[in-house]
Length: 173
Image (cartoon, rainbow, N blue to C red; front, side, top):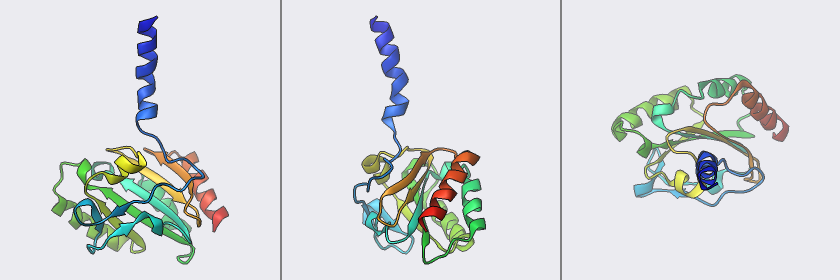
């Protein structure tokens, strides 16, 4: 009996250790600045800015940067109106062995490819700790105009996930 209980507990750990943000809620405020990170230009980033328009937020381990390329391309193809939709890519800089200087150079290139995306550095895994996002992964979050989470998914999105997310964006514009 004890053996069965232990097996059940350990089988549930992956589902409880990391969770997606609860849909319909506004997550706790996060500010990334100074030693915790911030925007590429060195200024602070505040999660309370994720309101007034629809925002998608990518939380990316640089080693998993290509996991959801299909999502980025699908969004780019939609050409959502810039006054109603925004995107933020928060890079989990502490999740990789790559030097910060190399990542920063890569982010500058990404900024040219996706000029309307705001790139933010998380140097201390703040979103992992405070929002309970998955470390060493690629998380996608969608926020409504009121700052509430509309969609939250850890890992690679399926085509069904992408279609659902795009539908949510369209319906909340």
